[in-house]
Amino acid sequence: MSNPAIIEPEPWAYHLLGLISPFLVISGNLLGVYDPIYAAMGVIFIWIIAPILDIIMGETQVPHPPRASGTPFEVLLWVHGILQLFVMGTFFWFAFNEGMTVWLVIGALSTGLSAAASAIVTAHELGHTRPRSPSWWLSRMLLFSVNYLHFTTEHNYNHHRWVATEKDPASAAEGESLWYFWLRTIPGQFISSVNIHNSKGKTGFSNPSYQGLLLQIGTLVSIVFVPGYLGYFDGVPLAMGWLIASFVSILTLEYVNYIRHWGLRRGKGRFKPEHAWNTEARWSRWSLLELTRHSDHHLDEGVPFWKLRPHKNTPTLRWGYYASWWPCVITPIWRKVMIPRLPSD
Image 1 (cartoon, rainbow, N blue to C red):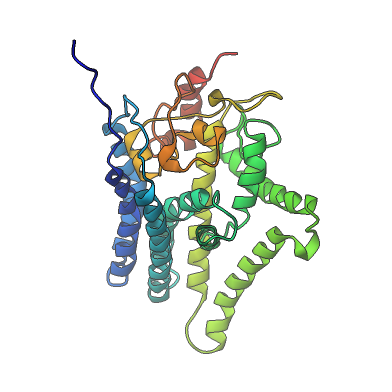
Image 2 (cartoon, rainbow, N blue to C red):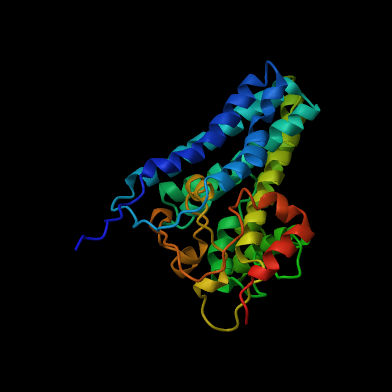
């Protein structure tokens, strides 16, 4: 009788695929100084090519055990974070040279789409590390780069506690479109973070959420006025480009929140695997640091991404995160495909 085949952990190098986007955007920002069409590289890859890769690469059928060592993945997080700083630096250089044109908007779209992964997904992972550790501080820098500093507070202290309930502004109801969800969740999460700090006695200007907002506004205003006042350069394109990039990055993050819990509700009981949507789509898994194995993340938020496991009989998305984007923004298509996939009571 033959022994069953031993399933080995997946090669960690698969996750290097997630570095394609920031490298493309860095290259596009630098080459865009000479020909602005290159600034569209990130948009073309993330909104057109990546959804196709999501579909043609298919889903992982047999789950692999986690790796014994997380060192390569810890290094990868820092690589993503450092590349995000280069993404922003090269974008500011592009904005400085391009000025207020339509190509500035396109370059900002590419930059924001890359930042949604290299900044926010990375910051999400690092935000679950020990407060004020080097990794935690990197997460703060990354969230500042997209003007969303309150995310860690709201995510760690409210979302994880009340996920899949009406008390969580990041959990979408079945009747909500993505467009309505965006309008509700973005201010709702900021207010939630303010209330969390208020409950700890940090009110008024001592509230870190207000402090972060003032820091972001102050930085943007300084970029607009100070360089021009000193006679150096016009700071308006840099500030406007940064706002657009941040806005796109935030919308992309909240799109991910939308598809991860849409239509799933729990009562007063504990979170269970069936209260989150999952997918084993290879491209989404590898390029987004296993973000798609979301049930396991909520069952134990302290588990690093490289140890997340798939769970059987959980709600499963029709497509990966990239391929779900276009159906999701077209509400009738999303509802037609996803309502039949909702768990029955």
